[in-house]
Image (cartoon, rainbow, N blue to C red; front, side, top):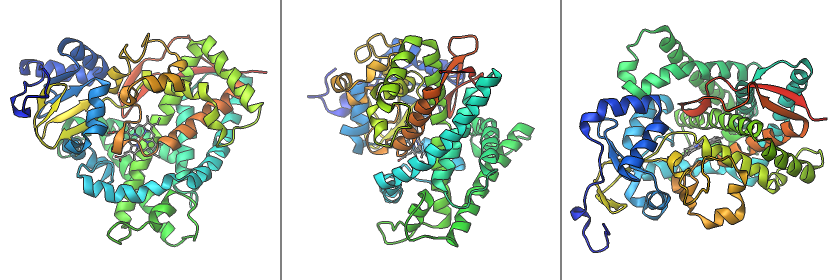
Length: 460
Ligand code: HEM
């Protein structure tokens, strides 16, 4: 139905899955959210209502309608308050959780200068050093012929780079290993937290859950300690993200408190520590499965770089390699939904969405729409050439979100990933043990559940 001549209140409600199926839909959503959402969209259409969560969720699985929510009509939609409640035990009052637009803007403005070209260049130099060090480890593995978990390897490299980007001063050598272990142990706790909320979860006496909660406390006290130490060691010129945030002045003239700094650093850690390594892992898994595409990437890297490490500017010139990363993001999208809430009764896809309703935009389904992605299940980095990008809606690719709440760390994540892809591929070939794709599961990011077992061999 067209909404043009009809007032919003007269519109029909979106097609809905029956409330009587709530239990089975929620169970399936818990097991395989992507599969469930794909099935529901096929049955009920790209805008439909599902009985998931306390109030249900309006699913949006169409690029044009997603663009309306994220950009064209963004004032009518905020980050969902349900998500704010869900995430605040993990991320405190960081800008990530805030649904109130004014409060979010105030903090976002002081985080943004972390991503100026000058600061990115600083992070680039440190990241390059760390990835080079990681790559040396592969030489030993190539020589011994030992199999290894690529996902664990990538996590270590990315967390090392991210930690040094956040805190270039004050880091001890053992910190990254401690953080790696701690993050890993938090997952069982976080899974329960998202399902049952903090009050119920804090009463579980399962050792895994207790260990998860303690690990989260360990990470938070590490961050608090870094903030305290930095107060005694300030520099005129900011060297890392913490320096930038301490120096920043908010729009009301105030500085960030220790608690706000801790929460926002924790958010930047959570935003980057799992998404990037998971995607780099999928990229190498797809490359191992598609030797012809791998060859095209190697030719580009060899031709542009002639054996050198890329400069920061050269990363942009590696178009096909960038396409490899984007294609891994398209097919193995992190996160299940981009979560929003309608601030007033409004129209979406010709239907009425009521004030306060939760909206879940589903990049996974949008990334498989054959109108924008011919042969959508095929891994093809050429999907991301400039010409093809120009032909489709901006919201046909939502791996980093879109509009004002788009991923703030995208350039850092891309830089880490591109350095891993290029520096590793200049010297080594990675092949998944047993071939094929690793099984996937969602927990914060979508990860290979077997850790992605790889065999490495030298190219020359
Ligand atoms: C492959 C890597 C990454 C992917 C796929 C990714 C994905 C996303 C997505 C989809 C969103 C937007 C959610 C929405 O619209 O509701 C987001 C937000 C965010 N990301 Fe990333 N991210 C990545 C890397 C990073 C890195 C490296 C950092 C930190 C340095 C980071 C920090 C954040 C933060 C803080 C937000 C919240 C922004 C806000 O609410 O204003 N992300 N990310």
